Image 1 (cartoon, rainbow, N blue to C red):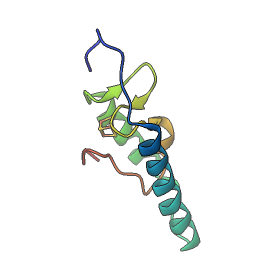
Image 2 (cartoon, helix red, strand yellow):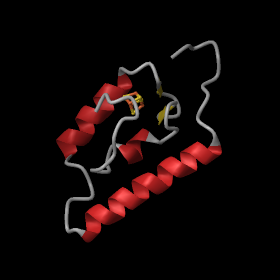
Image 3 (spheres, rainbow, N blue to C red):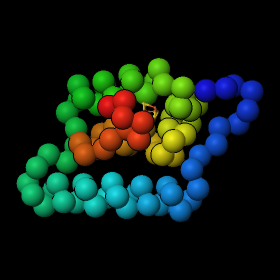
Image 4 (cartoon, protein in one colour):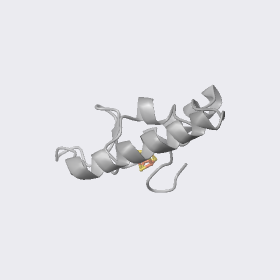
Length: 86
Ligand code: SF4
């Protein structure tokens, strides 16, 4: 990420759409009796990948592609990286 310019995030509408998509997938997962929260090693692996990603804002701990707070998103089993990195 370029340190000289402030990070930009997706529009509020796009972030809201992502939030509803994630909430739907998580609710469906939970209703099916499947794991909702990711295993600790999976969370650590995801966060490690994000920490080396040029789209990651390490100060805000947010992804600049989806706008998500990665400490939350990485813990949800059904979450996916919008760039296909995890
Ligand atoms: S979710 Fe994907 S695109 Fe976003 S910061 Fe993490 S690795 Fe990068």
